Image (cartoon, rainbow, N blue to C red; front, side, top):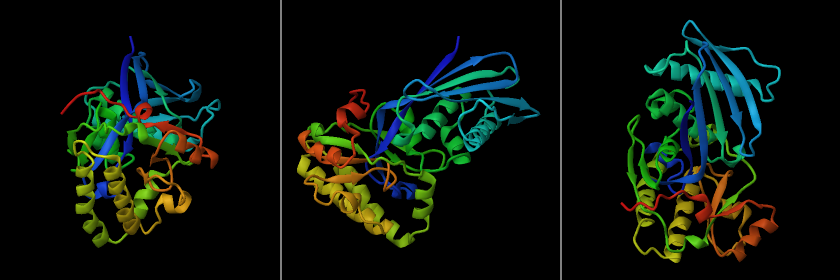
Length: 315
C-alpha cells in the first residue's frame, strides 16, 4: 500500500523579506496544499509523476539510482522543460544524501498532487520539500537550505495546521502557534495579481539593499506583528497597522507599495504578501467592493474563510 503525505500551502501576512533577518512573521497555512503518495516498487528507480490542481498530469520522469547518484534520461513524452527535471533530480539527490531511512535500491513510485494552480505562489516548492522530508525522515529546513533557500516560514506553514509566529534561527526556527481569526474576517480578501513572483530573485534584490534600513525596520515590524494578535482587534486598527507595514517595507525595498502602483483609488487597505509585485495581496472591504478588482481584470478574489486553514484550536 502507498504511504500518504500532505503539506499545507502558505501566506505571509507580516515581515515579508525582513523575516530573512530574524523579524517575527505572522504566517498562515492555507486550505490548499500538496499531497504526495509513495509506493515501493522493487527496482532501483524513482518513477515520478506530478499532477496539477485540475487533475491533469503535468510531467512524469524516471530517475535512476546508481553508485550513490540520482540520474535521468529526459523522456520525450515529458511536456515540461529540462530545468524542472534537473531541479527535481538535485532535490532527490539531497534527500538520498541526508536520509538514513531510505533504500533507493528497492525503488519508489512517487506521485504528487497540487491543490492550487502553480502560478498562485502558495508554495509548490515548500510543500514538496515538506512532503519529501516527512517521507525521508529528515530536517526539512536542512533540505530547504540545500535546495531552494529562503527563510523557512513556508516550511513551517506546510507542517502546521494553525497560524504561527515564525522567527528564523538557522535550521531550528522558533515557531509559536497562535490564534488569528479576527471578528472582521468576512471583510478580508485575497486578490491574485495575475503573475507569480520569483522568490529567488526577490530575495537577491532584498539582500542587495542597505543593511541599516533593514535593521531599523525589524523592531517596528515586530511590533506590528504582535499588534495584529491583540484580542478584539478592530478593522480600523488592523488597517492602520498594515498601512504602516506597507510604508516601512516600501522604504526598505525602495519600491512603491502595490496600492500606489496599481490601486491608488481603492477605498480599503491593501497589503502585499510574500514577494512584492506578484502572487496575492490582502485587501480589506466588503464583498461588493471586490468588484473593483474584478473590473480591472483581477478575477481571482478569495475570501479569508475560503483560503485560510484553521483547526479551530485555541492557544
